[in-house]
Amino acid sequence: MIELLKKNEQVYGEFNGGEIYENKPIGFPGESSSSKAYSNLFYWAHASAKVDSTIGLHPHKGFEIMTFVLNGSIKHYDTLIDKWIELEKGDIQLIQSGSGISHSEFMKKDSSIFQIWFDPNLSKTMYQEPKYEDFKAKKFKTINHKKLFVGKNAPIKIESENVEIYELFLDDNYKIKLDKNFYYSIYLINGSAYLNDIKLEANDFIKVQNETVLDFQIEDSCCFFIISSPIKTTYKTYI
Image (cartoon, rainbow, N blue to C red; front, top):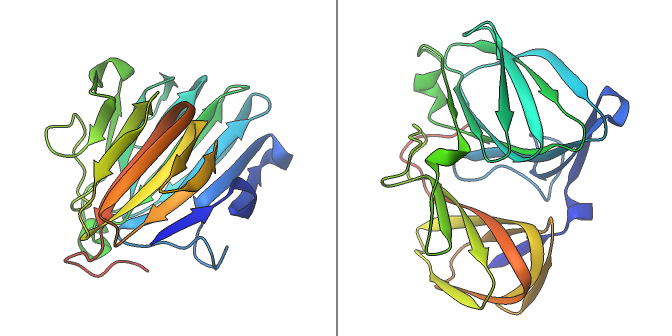
């Protein structure tokens, strides 16, 4: 099954009167019936800034929260390190919020990010010490079209089980064999293509399950952001 969610079908959100605006492939509980959490993938937002803008201090608890800088630069502050740190295009931030951490973000004009939340088994992580780490873009290498962030032999290790995260850069047609024990969640960052005969454009989101192969037919050079996560987790998730 391949489910397509166009940008205008995703959840819309904004901060500071629209200075920062979001399209959310996976919204918070209650935001949308067509864009709900599944597997250990809890939330996914694509945020962009029209002007320099700051999201004030706010708390997190239990979840693993990853921020991927797609364009421009951002700064972030949290109560664990008690200072502002700048991240640029290609950098990644990981917050393992544990028993609790508060966090603030500044987005520079024309910057954009993914913020993605994972459920690592809240019955355990809610009682763990919070952790924080930044990863610079130079840590991630592209090999055979694929830039791996999380997974086997990847630079980033998270507690949420059996998750792989990577970017896939394609100029020509390409096929990927799939494991039916996993969801494949795909966001087209740029370009245009067909996936198993479904037309895809920039900012489209695709949820794939119970398929054996992905057949990408490329029209314009594409960057796909892909997360594989288990159909069934060994622990009870929040949703």
